[in-house]
Image (cartoon, rainbow over all chains, first blue to last red):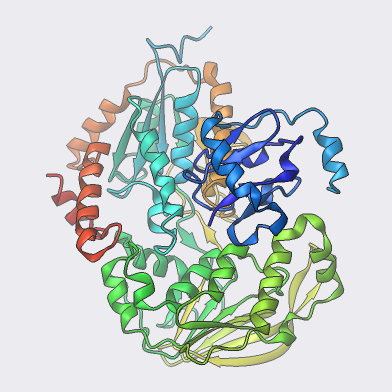
Length: 101
Length: 458
């Protein structure tokens, strides 16, 4: 069981999720956030916070997003921790609208 | 310009309550740019509040939040002052004299009542006391729960109701390698409960479980989830609610209910957990002991997302000897701190405590006692950060002369013969618990009496 950030975060990076993470397990690069599965406690507090529903937990991950399990696990440990909310990426609002949210 | 918060004059903050909101407030203070010293109080000899004594023992992964709290506690500017009851052992005014600011983060320690006849019959309990009991909370150590009945009823459909129902539904084998208190495991091993009814006043589209907690009921070793398909029929407003894209959590819960309803009951499983909707208890009947719950059928009315449940007058009865109410929590007032009795919270604006709409200097609040019992562990992080941001913005106003600091409080407590448990003391108790758990294959065996905890450190 693991909780992961998927496609929809790319180009948005709203970071609302970060404010409710009890263990600071979100990491970031220029495109999006990633969850470190070794730190995450699967509490799912972040899931309803995401304005573009990019976060899924364990049994709920759609098949076409399953590749993100490995990507989160590989990327997160090498990237800086995102502990506080950051400005969304430029164009995030447009992408959110395009995604239908 | 105030020099408060410089290394020669650090900001002294007392936090009352060492649960998640207390620790996240400590974290936010310790991470700030200024020089600060945090003294974190708890009335128990053990820290971590509901992560230790609320989160269910079979949810060990959630309890790993403690790893982060341990990191916070390792800061040289952090001090644990446990086994001290603020409001009785020391006054809030003592803390205002010793510290520049006080953050009250003591949670919502009691439950909401049903306010129906028969509520105090033997056999009618609060989820709070059952949860505290199986989690080894010293206040509930000696509670007795009669599990010799076939049928148990849980009123409420939130995560605490789910925890209570799941603990009653699980086998001893499913629980014995968790940190459930041994006294509870022994009683649960003898449980005769075969039918668990989880009752909500609103419909399946309004249940407050998290999807993940609900899903677990489909994966139990000896218990099958049961739902009457007819109870899953939705009115127009509820359909609208589930179609709303942002309400995906409720949609997932509803879909899970549908999945449960469609499953063929596994005849090899001996227990059944029934999820029932649109029912409110209106009376508990029995001769000293609970025998029957009288329920009234409800109907939803109002617009989508604003629907309320109203009684239809149609009644049904359910024979049961044990009932747990889990319909919400409320804070307990602390002497000297303003309190909103209607909400069970401390009146505040973004964490600044108010009295008659005026700000009370030096006093702040965070967590469930600030905003009411909503959200999960992490929700408290955002809540405590908001409070600390306000506190730090007030720093010039907080510079009100010399503060006597924690040493003054410690000597007051010593005079009263109160044994303060500091973080090093707690680590001793912690290692003993872990050691006692090892031979049983448990992450820890909790020490459930205060005097036994204190005996380990003297």
